[in-house]
Image 1 (tube, helix red, strand yellow):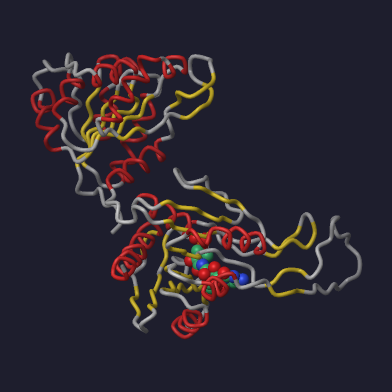
Image 2: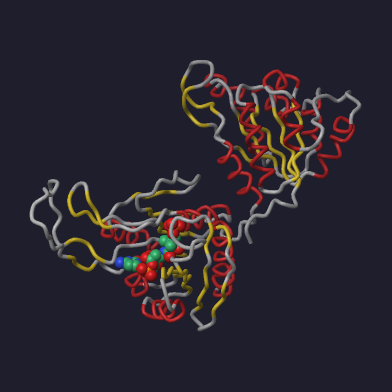
Length: 401
Ligand code: PMT
């Protein structure tokens, strides 16, 4: 199932770094996922962002001191017991140093020693501080203790220097929190996913393609990574950023996709081909821009290799999943592709619906299985479709072992 944090309690700890403003957005994203979020701030953090901002967005009193006498300061040790996950973002060198050495001298550090849930640390500081030996020692201690570390990004820092130390953007931190909370039922499995369109160039500035945005395939790759899989994503041209902790191979044409996919096939356990591959390419590709000329022009096309069909032919122990993009007769066409391409599952979607198919955030998919059964799913976010599909893959892959 999709990692559902709508019934989870997340404690967001904010320490005094310039990136504290980003944790306001992180709080908003966590609330959007339905989580119950409680906030603890160090006194220094309150110099960067006022507790009232976090209070308004979380709907709860913020804990900033052990001795305020309000609900939050009295209950913050209870929060440690109730938390499903604790995130420190940003985590300063001071907070990490204190936690690594068991020092408890304020609300946040006292709370941390009482936590038993997964802990996600997002260090953020000046590059030299980040690379200093005492800090590295403390961070390694906490990694060994089982904390999940979200490494900072490299880039220009507020202090004017450039290098590692920048707090990742809140959607990336959220992604790591979800990863941390997802059961690892794909651990040890190599998962190959293809996504996006292909482009078949006519000349350097024109091509044949389709409206695939890559959203469905990227959602599957992300979900597989969250579930512990080692994921390789072969992607056609998309506007989407590389998902975290996934090897992304960017290709343009169907021929390039075929090369990348066949190269990775032997080491893959599960292959999911979500890409919308062009069935044809121009017979000839002009090396220079074709000039406007006669009123009519005929474009000769030549068939591309059907990558999925070839995967089905070469298949040994791999679990093979295809997608079928249809405008009519879904069951008939998807069923024919399932058999012709020797697949274990095909996910059929009607791509003319406004809530389904190309470019949308949601999809309505029917899963057709090798044994002739089918499972229509309701309209869901593509992330949720990805997890249901992987649930079915895991059930079958594990049953085969
Ligand atoms: O990327 P999004 O905007 O999120 O849109 C998602 C999607 C609509 C692209 C996705 O849900 C989807 O339906 N993907 C399959 C698109 C497709 O090419 O369908 P098809 O019925 O033409 O092909 C069937 C299968 O054969 C697909 O798995 C395809 O990857 C594969 N194929 C097709 C042709 C070819 N030459 N080689 C292939 O491997």
